[in-house]
Image 1 (cartoon, helix red, strand yellow):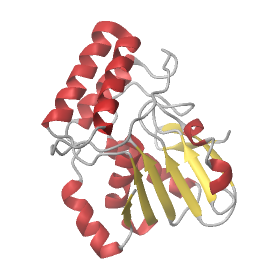
Image 2 (cartoon, one colour; image 1 turned 60 degrees about the horizontal axis):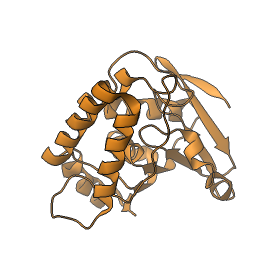
Image 3 (cartoon, rainbow, N blue to C red; image 1 turned 90 degrees about the vertical axis):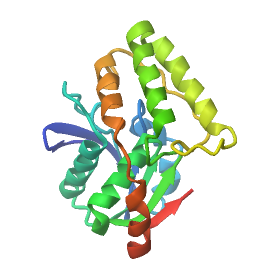
Length: 215
């Protein structure tokens, strides 16, 4: 699969089809292979592009803190490299958090925004959950971490308790290996995710540009 130099790393991506661009962004612990079942259908109608975000898949994995803002800027640089002036943007889970940040930073680049099983705010409950996940990773390694992550996803799929902060459906979790994502990567990412909060900005973007859609 092709790679392009984007800022300080190489971004790996998969592309199929022709026409108006559709960019797919996968979530934490996943990569472009997560779109394998839908790429053939999407590519019948769009130039469909699925990148591996920083630290995932075959993209660069520098030893440094990562953030949603940083992922967003990587995607913008990818748009520039691939000469994408505007695209439909579809994000899943953390990928949809990245998509939200991207549309806030570069609304002129987004024709439509599709958010799947995601969040736009880290409230006190999700903050505590991330702290527990980080401790489980330090204490018990990947198997303990994955058990904790699956528990969070199952809770997210239950009827709402009235508490804001995480919304979604029951999700599968990709198996991890030390060569795929490092423990330090997760620890760094959790620290950066604590302050993610774009909720207050999404409604004005939707109202003024008519591009936000929740599914």
